[in-house]
Length: 199
Length: 199
DNA sequence: CTACATTTCTAGACACTGACTAGATTCTAG
DNA sequence: CTAGAATCTAGTCAGTGTCTAGAAATGTAG
Image (tube, rainbow over all chains, first blue to last red; front, side, top):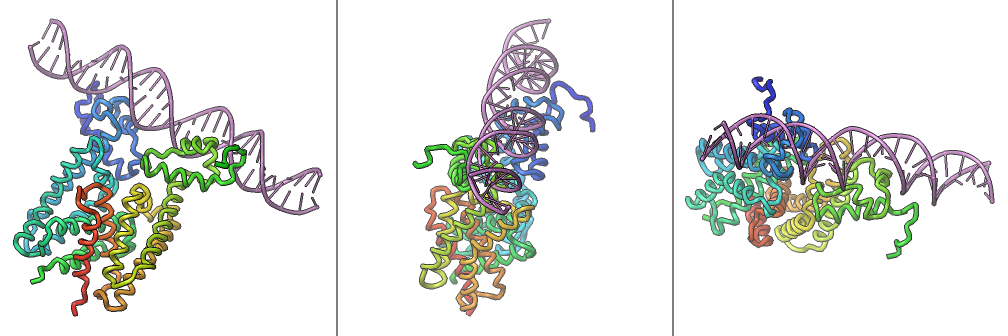
């Protein structure tokens, strides 16, 4: 640690607050996240965070944006190197999303907070960017005739809803002891059969 | 109001706490729910709730159980009087569930909190009771050959996940200005096409 | 009816939190 | 070098959840 000498100006407080907050978030949930405790751990006065986040909600929103960006990166990466038919790539998307959801359930809850809220336009924006790759994937499949496309928007909605639902069920502990990957790919399989073009 | 005379023993505090808490919950979310404020509104001292709920979490859990019971009633009722093919009855289930979810989003979040938690066995139990009717509906359809049943459990999982996902998307505000009922029935339609027995 | 035990509620305390303020310190342009 | 902006400290406030001791009402024998 080179951070042994406490200077008056921390120099990187905003970033370190976010990092510490995210660590704490996964361990204790939103309820157990305290601005003062964060400041204490970082070694800064209890009022310091206010310089970077006017509000606790502002910190949470920033965490959500970061989460969306990271999810977006993981999705881009996974879908970028995914080859093969639409079915396979959609499964890759679902698995990546579900893995993220189960790895960071508390963060996901923040990311899914109401977006029609004052001060959440950047959240909505980040949301759009995060899901750009899967949306493009679906649109491409529709254009290529790989899936039914009578109503593209409805199809995309159904796919996203299902995958988000899987994540909810799993993080809620309602999956019991069923194997995650099997449930995910089984569900995707059913969906795809329903989306097959009616020839 | 016959409750004008404040007696020492309220006589019905537990029930009134739950009712007040639920009202507040929908307006302010979990964050804005304060035991002391509840006590103040009801006209009782700040320590009184502790007699009925040892913990704030205990109040929240009780709220979740009540929510599950009410959801179960609504589902039972809706599915009880639903006639017709499996497709129609499944749509009724989805609509009923989504309506409940959009009407009580904060309560739904409580109901979907992690169930593998110390002191949540009654939550899990209530969860099972609430979804008894739709689970029976699905099992019946499988038995009657109305839908594919190579793996009954997987099929049920896919259906529940999808419907829960719809609720998440809608309460998260990500549905935009699309008509709710159309999105719901459109998604169900796709699922059902995928579940049609392969003859 | 009385005496006792239990339930229910009050009142006071404690540590903690998020938010606000004034002022000290450091950084940075000009 | 200096003035102003950015950053941090320290003190304060109302509010919260939880704990405690004890008062008040209720229920239950004898």
